Amino acid sequence: MSDKILGIHHITAIAGQAQCNYDFYTKVLGLRLVKKTVNFDDPGTYHFYYGNENGSPGTILTFFPWTFVKRGTAGTGMATGIGYSVPAGSLDFWTNRFKENNIKHEQILERFGEILLPFQDPDGLQLNLIISGKEDTRQPWETDEVKKDTATKGFHSITLTLRDMKPTAKVLTDIFGYKLLAQEGNSYRFITDAVDNAAIVDIIEDANGKPGVGAGGTNHHVAFRVKNEEVLMAFREKVAAFGLNITPKIDRNYFFSLYFREPGGVLFEIATDNPGFDADEAVNELGTHLKLPAQYETRRSEIEKMLPELAK
Ligand code: ZN
Image (cartoon, rainbow, N blue to C red; front, side):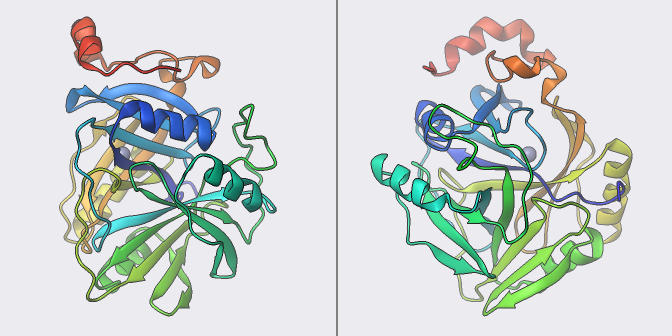
């Protein structure tokens, strides 16, 4: 199994104000900030990673917060819905919590036999809390306000919206080892049996849908998980043999990555489990220091001045 794609590794989106993003994800949603670093290509911008206690692959949602970013529009050629797995019976808690915190949410609905609560973060990013039809034994991160019986356990799924699902489905099935599990109208559910969780990709086919505009409140890319660099490079060969352009291996400090744009327009990444988020911080201190990659360490004081202040 270890030479397979192991579901979702992380999802990266674009946010507006850093403080607003931090407050929503750590306080309202109750995630742990597991790494506070900078955008490696633009060190005046933070890169936040939120996840469970250890920052396990399959729990990690990351943001580039740009204070003055315009709001984007979700649409075709984009990941349009982030699904978190939550415990059975928790959706009343979440509905009340979203009401109390003025978080936009919709009515609870059913999809593929599972119930979900759609909501939007303060920048308009679409997320869903989903009661998985399959038991999810992952241990959640707990806070004073979001306890184990309600807390998110990590990803359930990612939803892609595409004009034509077929070319993307082919990447999922022929390269990534996913299978079509079910179809409901124009929604298709793909799943891999290589892992128990974060194993689902839903595709909504919208032939006449407007292309998404990437900016604040939209997803930037979806990263799929592999065990190590050897498997990563084997997938590089497979993607290239499929006729798609793919980057060389890139060191992201906490994982190694490859990027390619799938035929439907979504930026895909493949990322390794190693070395993990405890590579430069102890597990009990994750997210508490500003961590910089080696190339920026000499510019630390300058970079710290450029970054917006972040209150706990
Ligand atoms: Zn990424």
